[in-house]
Image 1 (cartoon, rainbow, N blue to C red):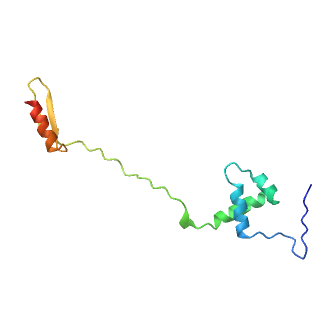
Image 2 (image 1 turned 90 degrees about the vertical axis):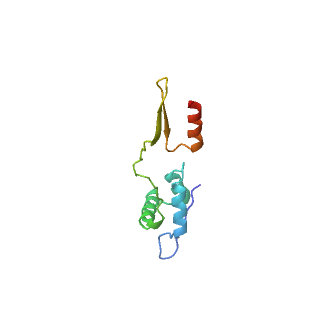
Length: 113
């Protein structure tokens, strides 16, 4: 059965509060929702919902826009600094880098003997 709304008085338009408009627009643009279904449920034209959304976007406070920070500095590729190079009797070569801990360097030299 259809519902009829009678508007009495000189005003022929329905008045929606800002909270009601925000609620209807939020409901219409939720994931999986269809604007036509929400418009029918609230007895409002689909174009009116799109208009409300457009007005809300225009009046939105730009201070609350989500931001994404991107590090655009080039990644520096640092070559390790060689502190010492030892030629081994079998033709191999042992390199000890400056970033190696003293214990690791001592263990490498001890193993080389």
